[in-house]
Image 1 (cartoon, rainbow, N blue to C red):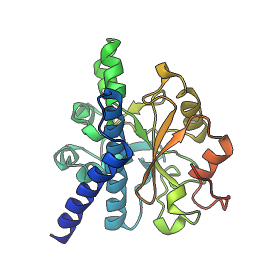
Image 2: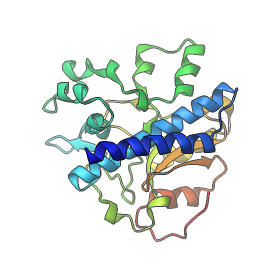
Image 3: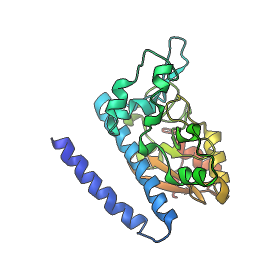
Length: 244
């Protein structure tokens, strides 16, 4: 019961914080950006709650017997995103794209898609069944980061500071099928960040939203230097802290 009270308090606080960061506006994009911010906030809170229950963050993927990616971390988060019914139907003994598991693809949680991404594809008449299953929220798979293949990290491994270490990143050009055990590399996220300065290649022009290990969400500008992005990804790199 205590945990549900905490969730309710956090929810109220998030709404209040969002109104301060992104005041209500007649501009539809401001509303969509606010929702994207809220999506990432939900995912970060889900990752933190998973950590509370299991003592570590989920790995970026669960591996099969030959250590190949078999299931995504996003599936492991379903019970924390009001989608336990989908989680209970998922068969972990089968590949992510087995006939049964892929039949669940239309059950993508709303928190996994940026509304600007969805709207753009509707406008361009490219909102096909494939695009409807893509997620804009990924982890950065890197040996120096929190998510390193099938290895699980603990919050105690983050010695660079939780407020300057990335958990989740928003992408557009590297959006992936939400069930697929695939995410992005450091180079991929740098590429997405650079091209976000182009309105036609960005969910929110001028940068990307990042969810940090302390639970905060930051908008990182497209002109942020590469070394600063690398510093954000490492969990114990010992780099000088950057301010964004």
